[in-house]
Length: 424
Image (cartoon, rainbow, N blue to C red; front, side):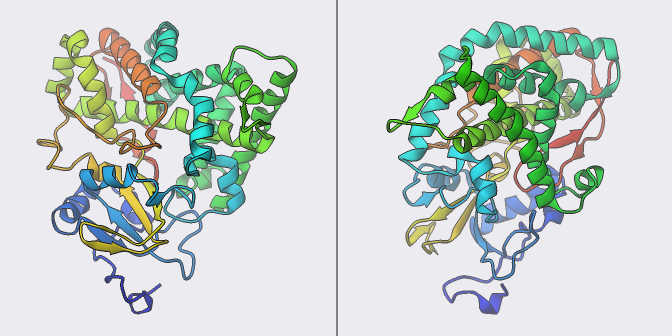
């Protein structure tokens, strides 16, 4: 839609580009130049429809960009005004794709609350504490195997392995299926990247996403069917035995749960580990401090790693009524996009936000969301995994070096495709 075709209450499109995939192919530091200007001058700004897996659909309206920490929190904590049920990503996806992949992520209460409770019981601090020894053992084995392997791709050798193993262990999926499931989960959020599409022999992102979805749903539904006949002590058994309003979950609902947990359980932790390795290579003084006082600094360092990585870049909400943000009129039906990476660099909240500081405290980052009912359910699991992998790595290989990361082109996840590591 051109500026002259916009509804009369909409301002001109902002001159800064947040919509194109070219913008999202830039580094975090380059993107921050735009975000800093918007935070200072135009904290609520109107932008053209975003370019994504379906290009830019003809006639699609634009979106409001929310870039300040305070405003992101406000949108997050007011779901009655800013809902999730009409989609959580920049663009409207085909309904069948949303239904099969986003589960309660793209729902509003009361259904969101009911379905989230079914999975949430597996992610309480008490339950995660029971897993801590297992997480520590797996982290130790992964780092030991890295030392045996030597130099290579840190993403493949370390970053993807711990979160993949833990989420599928919790679901009760066998180890021999975990690599292919994690690869399919990666593809669901990687379809915008031309290199990824080329590597899989297609230039059609929707085809690639559909293929990945089938690779996930097949084993997930097979596991669900097996648990109905032979229950175990795992999360998949909990799902097939659960009832909401007296009704068992359908295969479609269980499949969507499985896809969501596969993506969310892998991506956040994996990419935070990768970005943290880059930061610890760049900020040598912070690495030295952390390695010298793991017990004292690791808790604050983990929070800083998540802030720095901002592993989820954006989430969208839709206005359910006419409202205002910072005096800017938002119309019912308007898309409102929260930019967590910008919120995590907000100078009103973070002193010297472009510095990686392992002792930063307080650190009210928005790496797990801005609060409210959709705050990341797996945050304790992610924190525990990050703590154990970095405790082990900085104990046995504190002098590692990583090179230049290969970044995924995405306006959703801040992903690292590969990262060379050299052990010293």
